[in-house]
Structure formats: structure tokens, C-alpha cells
Amino acid sequence: MATDLTRIYRNYIACLNAQDWPNLETLVHEDVCYNDQPLGLSKYRDMLERDFLAIPDLFFEISLLVAQSPYVATRLRFNCTPRGILFGLHVNGRRVVFTENVFYEFLGDKIAQVWSVIDKAAIETQLR
Amino acid sequence: MATDLTRIYRNYIACLNAQDWPNLETLVHEDVCYNDQPLGLSKYRDMLERDFLAIPDLFFEISLLVAQSPYVATRLRFNCTPRGILFGLHVNGRRVVFTENVFYEFLGDKIAQVWSVIDKAAIETQLR
Image (cartoon, rainbow over all chains, first blue to last red; front, side, top):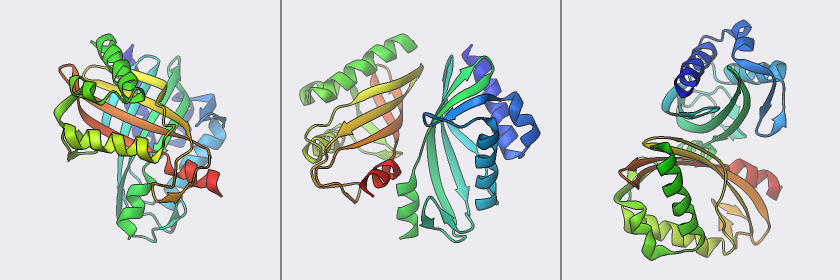
């Protein structure tokens, strides 16, 4: 049901914000795909850990959530100070605010597919 | 209901693909906002008409649709040959494939808010 997925998804975001990596396997499928590429849980976790290294004050804020089983779609908002280069842009510790619109497909109670688009253009505009 | 919004949304996409601009007012609210900016129906229509001028073979393809009233979220896929500069990128008639993840909030049976993120980075990669 959509309400169950909403609850699980909020646990997933809490897991990311706590950098509670041992818990990730309870929320993300072993064979997770990211933007149609087979990635797997281990590389998915690596990607998230790299995000937190690049953005020490990274925090996932849900600004909109739409759920229809087996899908959850969210608009995530970030307000942070990435350390160096982010998405090929020289941010170098400046504060940037940007969004990510992202879809998740669940297999049972775990995220199995992620389709993400990050608003890189918004960051470019803020760095001008 | 979600099924009603899905039906209305598919009519909206058919309206865009047919460039049936007189019909747009039956699907989009007079005071429509785009990425949190008040735009209004007239400027929203102007924006869409400019898109079709810049991309003569523009076609909106729904690759994923998630509906939970009053929201619809879709992942749109584009496979097209933009004429000149698109999103600041010199495409100049080359074929590019990219996606847009977009949320819509309905007021009654009309689109009142749109929150869109277009995958500009994917286009950059294809132009390299």
C-alpha cells in the first residue's frame, strides 16, 4: 500500500541523514538499479558515502512525496556547502540550494530501482 | 481520485503533442505556477510554444507515471533534434535523448503547480 511505502521511504531518508550504512540493506534491494544501470547495494552505498564526503553537511529534505504502489516519487531539497567540485561545477564550499526529482520502484519493502534527475542548472545559476 | 488525474494528465500530454493550444485552458489553471514562480496560463503557453520552436520534433513520452491526488509525478522521455542552443548547450540539430522528472499539483481538474527538473547533464554528456 502507498501508506506503507511512504513510511518505509521516510525510514530510508532518515537512514541516509544518519549515515546509518549498516541499516541500508534493510531498505535497499541487493540488486538495486540506478538510472537504468545495474548497480547493486554495495556500489549504491559507496555512491552515498561519496556524496557525504563531497558534501559534509548533506541533508535530505523531502519537499514533496507522491506514492502509488509500487512507486514513490519525491522532490528532495538540498541546502548545503559542497567541498570542491560537484557535478563538474567548482562549488568550493559555497552555499547552494538545489532540488532532485526522483522516482523509486519498490520490490516488496525494498527500493529496487531509482530514476533521479538533479537540478544542476540551478547550481550553475547560483555560482555565476 | 488518482485514476481521474491520470486520465486528465494523459489528455494534457496529448494536447501538448498535438500543439492544441486552444485546448490548454481546459487542462491548465489560469494562475499556474512553474517551479514556484507565478507564471499564469498565457506565459505557460508561450513557454511551451517556444519549446516547439526550439525543438521542431518535440514529443512528450511518459515513461513512468505516479498519481496520488492531488498530485501526478511523471518521468518524461525525449528523443529529439533541437535546432540551436538548448538550456545553454549548443545542440545544433544533433539527436539527443534526455529525461525530465516532473511533479504536478492539480486544483480540481486543472494543473495548478509544476515542479520540473530536466536532465541537462545527460545532454552535455551526449554532446562531448
